[in-house]
Length: 192
Image (cartoon, rainbow, N blue to C red; front, side, top):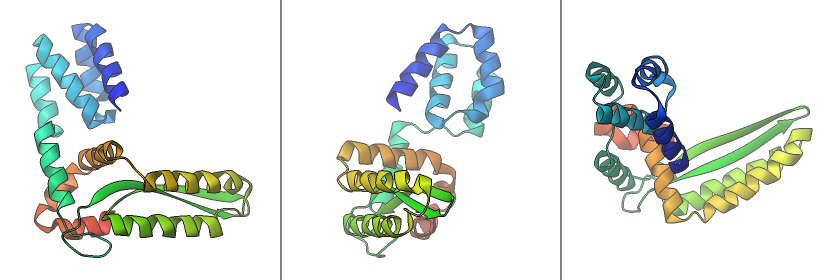
């Protein structure tokens, strides 16, 4: 992610003013929130397109690091969506699942938010389901071990990766989080 941001920063720095404004007008909808903030920073640094900057900022509320960290703390201190207990610090992790039937194989990757105890249960459940239901097609033969190995790697996730996952979760779900702020526990239960 950091590499992509630095690459975008370098590309935007080398663009002419006209092409940067044209790019911002036509492609902003397809950019991730991190890249949008890099684009806005470059436009501000050059002092071009103030009305375009205002339009982008109003359409895509740009989150600074302080807002992101506040949301991360709010989520971490919420009730666990799995066991419904408060007090255990919540973490964000990815879980993978593979299902196969004869010629069709489905590989699912989901983001979960849960306490440490529930994380182990979720990964165990995903691995059991994958182990039992993943092998039954040609592609399933390859996807099943891949899913299981990645789940086991995620089980022992280092804090830096967990922080990255949580940051991504906040960035991609910000509008819904803000909408459900008063009932965040219910939102987490239904969407993780």
